[in-house]
Length: 460
Image (cartoon, helix red, strand yellow):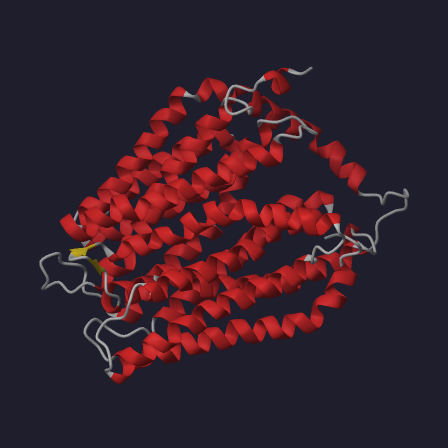
């Protein structure tokens, strides 16, 4: 029995998983804490007690979309830098330190510090995100059956941090002062770095495995140059079956971009809808509107295990849908979420109500989360299965660009949201078009599910 399989010091998993779990938890707390405040801070009028930047809606939404796009886009160079120069451990530590500096910079009430802070967070996240996931996988030797369970625990760390973030940073930002919320995000990242440093000895086995795999990479690439039958590869080094599989990835890349463009309204238009147009008072007590941002990660913690069991059960009875059909379901569910928000938007636009009940958003986020669980984890698994072995890493980086583009488009959509104190008549228009775009995409994709599934060559 190997040393790795004997390491069961943390819920039956290697002790290093606890270090990476809490590092990621604190990093996500810092990221989602700042994200919950960002669009609200930029559009808050300077004349208010808790003064913001007073940006126009179009300017603020464009900055938000560009920022979140770059956070994802820099994951690809972040992985390359770690592979070639820094190594995964140093990349994560340096990335976390840069993120913390970015949050602390935003605690100062000047525009140069604000934009510098955003830039630092982008760079730091690009270094940290891809490399911490690499280390999680490297905690286990090839064939270790605990690996999937380890990633599930790690994913829970992400969602615990994301759930706590709006409650901690959102409350401070909205109730005390914006810059206290940004500073709290920085403190959270520092907590993550401290425990990462003290737990570094638990990661030595994972780092050694990463080094060993890099040495073995040329041999793996050489093996990948031939098909299982030993025949030479075709055009550009890819076999006949690999080309249609790449086509599936390309087609679903477009769908993924549109999904994230709709889903990421959570940080912009839906966040602002909660802040300006939703009644946040319960029994005379008013809670911060940013708390709605905690719904998605809480729903994920509840429903992710149920989805996992459902896919396994459907697979056993040979009824599990292939990835394209799961994408269809994801798009339908996110479209339903936007259909739900249209009636209260109509009430606001017609002047029948100044604010609407919180229940509307509670159900919107429920359907959006159910859609996310159909598409997001499935897409990552799909890319690793369909991509030719020698370019799996590159294709994963390519796939992450769909998140980046989706976030940018999301920001452009949010430019049409009403200004502070403006006419709410555009609300139903925005949400109606998003529902049409996502629902229409689902219908079109449905008619292509059979050919796309056939192109996958039996891979689900």
